[in-house]
Amino acid sequence: MSNPSFTAAPQFADWIRLAPLNELGPGKRIRPQCEEINAIEPAELFAPLKIRNRNAVQAALAGLLLLYDGLEESHVISQSLDDANGSYWHAIMHRREPDYGNAKYWFRRVGKHPIGPRLSAVAAELAQHSLAVAPWPAAEWLSEPAALWPHDRFVDLCAAAANGSAAQQLLCRQIQRNEMEFLLDYCFAEATQSI
Image (cartoon, rainbow, N blue to C red):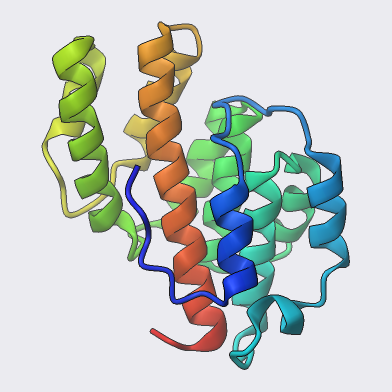
């Protein structure tokens, strides 16, 4: 996995670093961490930086909850946000639910997101290594980085991997993790206006 260039506060970065590699599906809610995320004061989470964008803070919280399999709590937050970041978390939550059609709807609302090129590059790197060991024709498109990340194609790939081999699932889980980390990094930067 690639490490995002976290400009995040130490506590925020620790939440990400300590999270497990999520399943493609809903996973089992990690209760203590979800409860702690729900109780934490955003100013404490983002310290020492000053919060400048409340929507981005909420999007980051939705993402942290999703990292710890708090799908319902993440959903409540993300569906209340009327911006690309909220729609992106909403789409990932539905993809993991799994409700692939609803995920695609929310990804269409995201459109072109700034993390797309970076995600595409990391996905290509992960795919090249994975496909060299365990060929998977449906995933060959990942090997070529694209300027625009194809959300719908990745939803379809996750759906196929859900019933596929362990190698197929691992590849999609690793890409999903990078996607979530890059989006968290982006939301943190927007929240503190450090981008």
